[in-house]
Length: 154
Figure 1 (cartoon, rainbow, N blue to C red):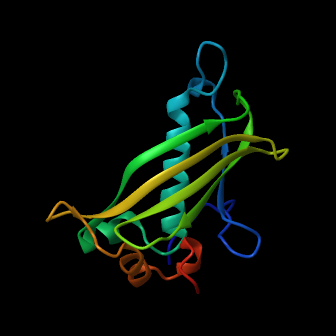
Figure 2 (figure 1 turned 45 degrees about the horizontal axis):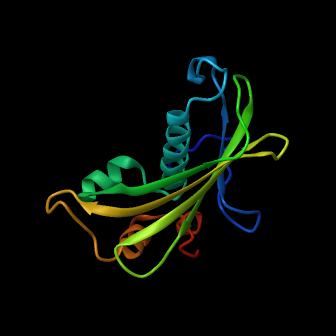
């Protein structure tokens, strides 16, 4: 059985997978705002949490000889975050034909305020050949025990 933070919610009819995070003081800049690089860390944490919730821990991917890669990331900052803010980071996999897929994410304060939108173009890398897999969707579906979390159906 895979372990997921009890507060995390799996994707389903209620929306995308989400994970709660509390903004820590050491993650802020001199203006007291969440440092821009930390948004990327939050996004990455939510992605790995979603894979874990889907039944694909990192060790399973490594044993299979594959790993996720991010090829492009766009962050749209909407509202500032400060130390102590409680946020939810969402993670929705958007599948398309070919070697890449998109992960759409939001960072929302507990009151629902949208703080950031993050969009990443990703792929799965064959760790031996150092090339993207032709069909990342099939590879993840094959490994997942709960593929619905990744938008791959039940």
